[in-house]
Every structure is written in C-alpha cells, then in structure tokens.
Length: 439
Image (cartoon, rainbow, N blue to C red):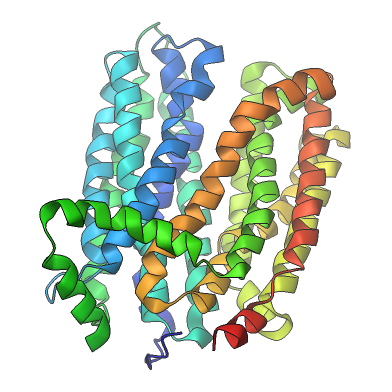
C-alpha cells in the first residue's frame, strides 16, 4: 500500500472539493425523472423505453474504467491528474443539457443521451478517485459522505425544479404530440449551468497532490510509448487490475449484485405499484413516485454527514449492513400502506440506506486499493453497478411475468428480499483484514 503522508483538510476544504458533485448529480436526477417523458413526448413507444436508456449501463461499463486508468497515468503541473477529466466531462454534459429540451426528433434526443452519459461518466469516476487522492484515511469517511450529501442535494434539486416549473408554467399549457413542453426547458438550463459552474468551483478551489517520484516515473514511461501502445494501455491496466483485485472488492461485488438489482426494480416498479395499491392513474402514480424520491433524497442530505461518526465508532461494515436491512424493510412495508402521506414514512429508512450506499463503500475501497491504481479501481467499482443493471434489464421481465404473476406488489417484495441478502453479504466485508494482509 502507498503510505504517502497527506495533510488533514478543514470541513470547508472538503466541502469545496465536493461541490462539483452537485452538478453531476443534478444531471443524473434529470435522467431519472425527465428523460423518459421527453422520449414519450417525441413519440417513443412505452415498450421501447428500456432499450432507449441502454446508454447508461453501456457507457458506465466502458467509460469509467477507461477514464480511471487514463487518469492514473496523467499529471500536469497546471491542471493536475483527475481535474482535466471531470472538467472536460462537465463541459460535455453542460452542452448536452442545454441542447436536450430542444430535441426536434426522437433519434436526436437518444443520441444526446449517449453523449450526456459519456460526459457524466467521464466526470464521475475521476471525482471518486480525486477524493481518495486528497484525503488521509481518517478523513475518507467525511469526504465520501460529503459526496453522498451532494448526491441527495443534486437529485433533490433536479426533481424539485421539475415540480416547481410545472406548477408555475405548466398548468395552462396544452401538450402537443412531438413537442417538448416549454416549462421543462428551465430545469435543463439550470442543469447546464450547474454542471460547469460547480465543477469549476472545485477545480479552482482544490489543488491536487503531486504524484510521488515513482508515480511520476511511471507516468513519464507511459508518455514515451507509441500512440498505439498508449491507446491499448488503459485496457491492459483494467485487465491487470481485475486480475490482482483485492478480495474485498470481489466480496463487495456480490453485495452490489443484489443491492443494485433491487434498486433498479424499485425505480422501475414504484409507479406501477401505486397504480395497484392506491388506485392511481399513471400521472397520479408518477407524482406520488416523485414525492417518494424527494423525501428520501431530503433524508439523504440530512443524515449523510451524521453517518461519519457512526462509521468511525461502529465500523463501516456494520453501518452499511444495517442501512441495507433498513432499506429492505422500507420496501417490504410500502405495498401495505394505503395512505399517500403515510407511505412517505418508509422513505426515511430508504434515505438512510441511500446515504450509506453512496458513501461507505467508496470509503472502504479507498482504504484497500493502491494509490497508483485508485482511478482504475474506482472505475471497476462502477462496473459492479452497471453489470447488475444489465442483468436486471435482461432477466427481470420474465421473472416479473412468470414468477411474480405480473404483480408490482410482488416486485417490491422481491426487491426488499434482495436488499436483505445484500445486507447479509455486507457483513462479510472486512477492511482491516484486507489492509493487514496487503501489508
């Protein structure tokens, strides 16, 4: 392990370092809430929505580990190691967000989604490594939980802006086939501004730590390679990193398989669930789903930093596992609550779980991977997210139809059970043992 001495940072230095995550997560919030309605406005059949969203898992699977490997071998005294990548990614994302609501036809919007996902993933992965690069081990929990706070804040602002602008400007508008409502433009314009300004804030406020002499020598050797070898090098780095991956990450991959599979089931079937349990129309059910999202992201913002002292006292493994259990219990309870206000209560547990999921695993991984490969391993960690997404996309349709009787209630219970399995697997994670074995 690389034991470079890193200075402790103040709370506000850590805050400034993570501000850029707000813009990235605002963009992801729009993707969760507004992209599919735009596809529908432009004439997409409902049964085509899953395939039209395939950009997310494909770009996440390819872009993040490649960018991670490239950033590990990058250094500029002026621009740094990770910052050039998430700055370029933010610029790409910002341009796409400004253009998205003016999409004239469906194929144009789908193409923009692919480019937007490339930009977001290009910004996301080096950002995870950036925090690990800067912070000493005792501050890693605070750094990644700060990112978790901005995850909740970004998605909350995205969803809240859509609700607000629809209320202010959408009430009297008439939907026209093939046209995107004008009130939806504003949320995307805000996202385009946030994407670049928040990243610039972090870039300008936070200097990167220069690489060690050994790392710098490796970077120089990489620069001396031929163009073809430099293109092939990231792929070789990914393959080698997977081959030598710490056993801790293989165990975390098993947790992620069940955790992220369950999350995708929840996001896909929460709207159909409310049609079944509350007798809502599609629009009413979608509105209720948006309120659920707003609720749990508010909770995430509130509790993200509160998890830091808990993880320091009781250990990340226990807090992570208990949070997953709480999320599973939340999903078990939702189908049996018939009041639209009371059904928001389980989102407290879900929000705590979401805060833990977005912070604690990254803290643990940063402690067990070598500094010189932090970028590529953070990219591989994201592969562990998008692979369950692909598996769920391909497998859950038949499971839903033939094993769960086409019932959204059963789908939610199924997701709850998967969270409990993930929690049990999380109890196998042992960071201290991994570090000792490595030393």
